[in-house]
Length: 448
Image (cartoon, rainbow, N blue to C red; front, side, top):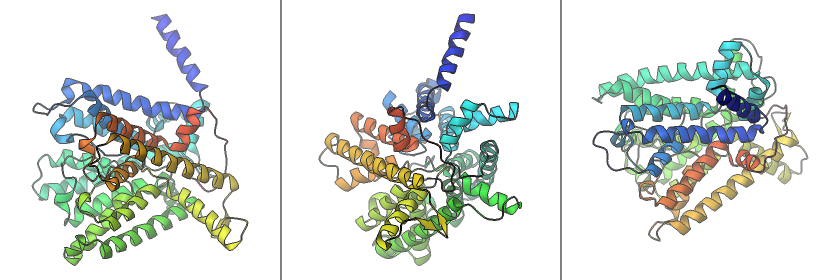
């Protein structure tokens, strides 16, 4: 027994010497493998579930931890209550991020973080200057559970009013899934049955936006409310402005351009357009309208939103709004002949611009490789726009699909698993982990 303890202690000491980006990548991989083992247990399978192989369970586990929501099999029809609980736990762990829950436990017991754990946390959460990691982690956990509890209470009454069975469990499941922008649901048609229900739509949207804008913004707003800071950080201001304008613009474009949505009554048309724009922007992945019925114009809008994605230190995926903003600011400076990128009189450091450029390049390269591999693997009958949409959704950890996911071959599932994993870890972080390079710290105000 002593030899086993010594071996484990030695391995833990070795792990602390591994670069933070590698620890993050390995941490998510271990979450996914652990969830895979649990989902393969007989107790996790429903009594009358269809035949599901081990690869499908791995796909579900990776999708849950990466908070994507793509599934090759029905969640409610395949898994028992224990299996659904495992999926929900994986969503929560993936949404809060690697090291968050463990670090929170350490903080409650000791009051401080070990240096090794602090180094990984600082890399996992790209915090602006002035944010204390320990306080930030406490706020992340508290805010998350409070918001999810409120969301579950509202959804419980909304679902019970419409006669949904087990409304309490379905409300909890969808509240956590929405806040973690996972898109996993216990209805086989997502939220299409609630397309005209404003309470369900707006509650899911509120939860998704709170998760997607990120804990930086929530903590920043809280500090303003309690008087601990006089102004919001540049990061928070950019996140809120970009998220608002992209949501409004996409809603109007879908409202005006999609022919089938145009056939809905005006109020339903606006609510449906807003929800689809919201679900792509926050990368939550729920839908109230069949994605396969969208025209190509609307698909382009959705794919652009999925690529841009949510915000740093939040639960969503994608390239991140701050990365897009940094690249847009750089392009604008080149067009106007300016030397410095500024927003509201605040300069964006050059290190952030380089990071944004690297993240954008690697993101687009990963997407290109994923689309290429899927085109080689999938049958010729699969339309290119469906393949592209699937790859964008997987890498952005969105979960929207035009019906291609259940028909994926085994090789196709492996490619999509790779895209979901890369999307959750981040192509830049994953590339750094594979090359074993350490990230250089930067203490500035804009998180990318």
